[in-house]
Amino acid sequence: MPRKRRRVLAVMARYYARKTSCGFRSASNVSWLALRARDVGIFPKLLGVIAALTGVAPIEWIPDINLILALGAKLVVIPLLLGFAWWLVPKPVKARLEEEAKGAPVPWGFLGLVAAVFVAAIAVDTWFDFTYPGKDAGTPSIQPFLERFE
Image (cartoon, rainbow, N blue to C red; front, side, top):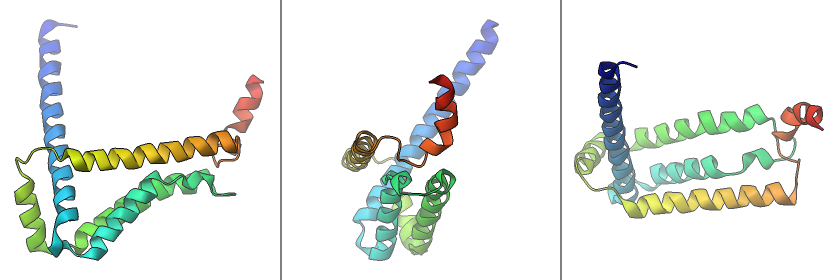
């Protein structure tokens, strides 16, 4: 690869990494401030919590559920819940939260809380994997491929 092309790729990678990290920091700050703000209201906060719990819930362990339905719940329902929750926040409050979030440090407590929820979800899913092997929604989908190797 020519030296000039590598240089361009390195500059582009740094630009997108910086842009992504700033967007992540701003979004996590807005989420943290929205959870703590009294004027946001309880209903948007509950919708956000329900969306987070839906994201980490082991829904594929419900008996006789379709794997596509389980994945669709995570890919469609969660963004809809979060979008509806943000839509319910009044516009002046949204503007204030976004302004407060600019340039603020990363809310490590909030990220720790999110990480703890994900670790708990992984622990529950792993427990189900070992307690009931082969009973999740993904097993019937991959069973024909597994039988070829046996």
